[in-house]
Length: 263
Picture: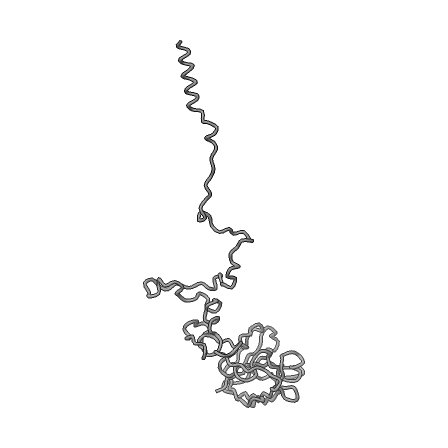
């Protein structure tokens, strides 16, 4: 009888630890919609909703100082790159009201922006006179350049290629033809020697330019030797000036650069 009791006890114990097959039948509840981020695969990217928003570093703002009145104001601060930012001063309100295609820099008249917004590009707008067919003389020249102190009188033609320089001085294409920085080049030896003595000009020497727009006298301000790759002398200017280039004898890597300004 004792062995029967042990057998019955063993059977009952086994039945207690064996899980019924139907207990394995269960299902997952679906995750809530907020458990996962938006998919990032190419066909589901979300930028198509607002493709014209600048997401680059160009639109970054330098945050206002701690404790300043705008320190907790969203979107406040100065642009890290104001000349590139989509909402920067060069992209918003940078045209003269009522005009098209006339960009102005901060600080220029009519922009509505004070010069302190972008100090690196502030100041008066550069003066510029565009070359039009009506400014040519019948012989194809743009005018006459005179420097009395070195006995020079030479006509100025458009372009600085060999064809122009064989006839006289050449006007740098793309630079102003009157107001602003008028830029010319000429030979100093060989078939022509127009600018052979410009490096000897003294401060205050007169340079006279005559065009269909008038006669203007400039006065020599600087004579310098620059690298043949230095084109900074061609930069626009708010003031009226003339910049003259020619080669340096036996130094092909350099150019004489003479600048005269109008008073």
